[in-house]
Image 1 (cartoon, rainbow, N blue to C red):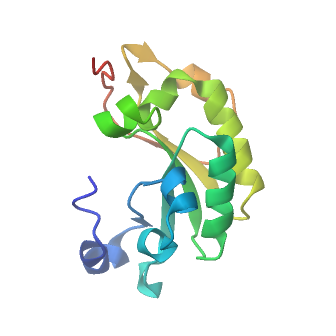
Image 2: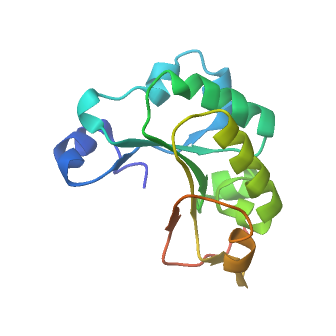
Length: 155
């Protein structure tokens, strides 16, 4: 997906949709010196959603605080990325659907550190588990659900 969400593509279609940033990890935002590379966008891209992933609550809080200065219209916590690098070794993305309590904690941390709406992007299930009921246990303003389940057993 990241190869299609380049700024040039976004500029061509921005008037048709809500623009989502490339998926960015909390670690990159907090430790990378050039946040503009990951957080910058043009004014024409509004409304724009920052799509962030991560599995460390402190790093998520700090990354959201950094992102506030950029004026995103919404923050989205990515619990749907199927990439082996992210959901496998990175232990976030779709893998987080196996830990809905952590997702609830992460959403609380994200919401506490921003004034814009927050949402979760997820899949309808992972590893043959339907996680809809677990995800409904905590309050989220808006769901973006992929129409496909996936296997994340990479090994």
